[in-house]
Length: 224
Image (cartoon, rainbow, N blue to C red; front, side, top):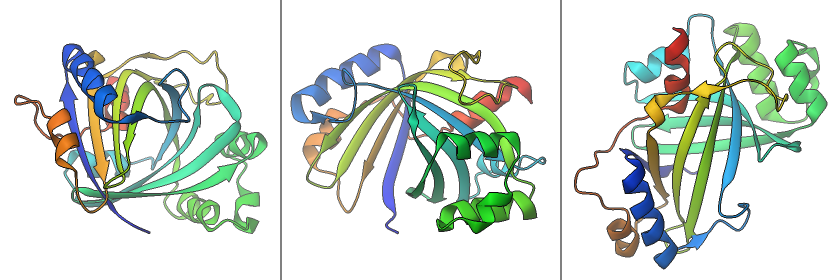
């Protein structure tokens, strides 16, 4: 499990347009994106006491969170993900879920998970039983991803962040969501051992600060 460097910046819409143009000149669009974009829907998990949220707000360096995710409305390919953070480094492990399995987790039907061949599914089950981890909120957003081979760089522009508030009907495309995060945009840069100068220059904004921004936190704030 390799940790990667991760930097996030809150940027304006005009900044996003500028970064988009620069990245198109020096990097490639993610080949899996549709017209250069993903529409991402995630369902985040937390404890009844909001452990993941409080750890984020308290600046805990080492933390983890679980989510289920699919792209562009395609529920035939669903991932369970565990995202782990250690300072400015991050890593992610994944497991594939069927539609029925994802719906069962949302519905609280979890006994099958302890018999799964996938260790991540069993790990989520353990947390659901020991910490009462449960689905907490839907997070929707649009992502424009760019990739650059040297350094294994990935640059993403995220915007149109929306919260499901109390709705957990994750697989329902008609589930109502509302704007969150004051319509800000997020620039995120990830790389392995080094960040090439050409990418460093392309994403540089003199007024932008590195932020520990969390879409999950932004989408929880309206209901806390």
